[in-house]
Length: 245
Image (tube, rainbow, N blue to C red; front, side, top):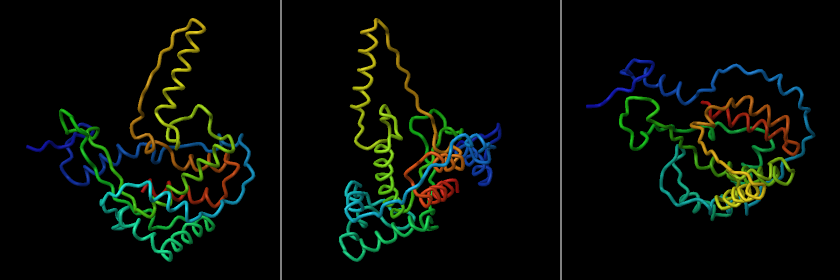
């Protein structure tokens, strides 16, 4: 017997009903009103040009990926791409494409293509609720590669320009759980020195990125990042728009 997913007290029998239920769950921030005027107090900063990518960056990004044969929408896998970049002409073409879309401030429609798979969460007593499922988004391998290269440069620029607080550990390269443990230990010992007790609270925000207002996020980036080119802000905006779709 297969249980129908319940949404707003009604079973989702038809495909459209099921789509509406899952879409409303995983896109909570979509169409929510925002007031961008709250950013007016932040002045626009001077921008600089984004540096060109090098071959070593694309090779490092690929080498750190596993050899999974899982095919993406572009029918490529990391294993295939590792073989492709061994060809000098192919890797030069990839570098040219990456630098060109940065210069033009344009995110190719090919990179916006994705396949979303809804999978059940493990060990649930019942699967008649949308909360018992989660989306897995499969992106084109080439897009994933370029994002890894951009992400590495973003981290370098943000840290070198003191944009990221020194206490920020999560989602940063070369910052491990060990660093978080050392920081927590420091806080505890500092409290003991002052005859204080330390309590910690850990929590996870479900579907955090999907609950963000991506339009407002792109406006914040444009306001506060002193070292990003306007081209990159345009690309970021297009990338986030692609994620909404």
